[in-house]
Length: 290
Image (cartoon, rainbow, N blue to C red; front, side, top):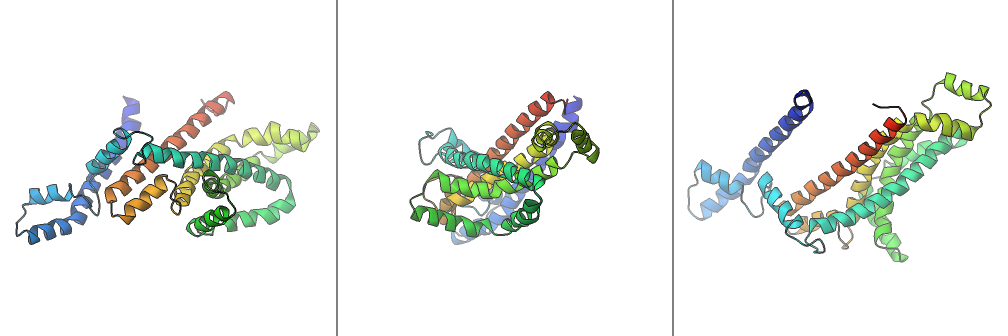
């Protein structure tokens, strides 16, 4: 009961408030179209009829939550996963690019962090460029990368994964730099007293100390990788949640757009939860968490 009051109840309250506001704004934003239809049909709508209309329009400005839920059900449960109308089909395409890009970004970020911590030249030269690289809008980079790679015969999964890598390596690199530098001066002096090499200091002191920072940055990195995969899918007709969003905007299918957004958010939550689970198990085995 204590856990319910401290954790579940506040979350449920926030979720309920979000849904209530969502329904209210659905009424506000869709009222103009409902009234316009009623005016053309020379019909006077009561408040109840107006609310019912705003929550059941085919192409609303803002779909009601139950419309999104119905769309999610129809495009996940009622569709075969091989169907191009299935969100599971498109979600898998996005997930595959996300995981590959995240893996490459994590390896690149950790490698850069180790080099920055152990090499003063890299610290002075590479770190500013890492920060500067994130100032370039990903919406400007993604189409260029896709087009250039397609022109040299590279298409499919890899170009999208590279966009995910571009977004995910930075938080991992920055987090790991902070983590690898987290040992105190006394701990580093102790390793020198034991005549430990740089490699021994890295694996026996710096690496274990950086674990909390690593997993925190991985949570940010995997969410960024998902965003990168979705953005990279916008200019490609292959599939994925990004293409689902784009086709929905082309044809004014706002319910389709919102269902894809909800699916992307659920996918991100699941990925972050998996990283969090790995973090809990790893830190517990290392004696850093209960």
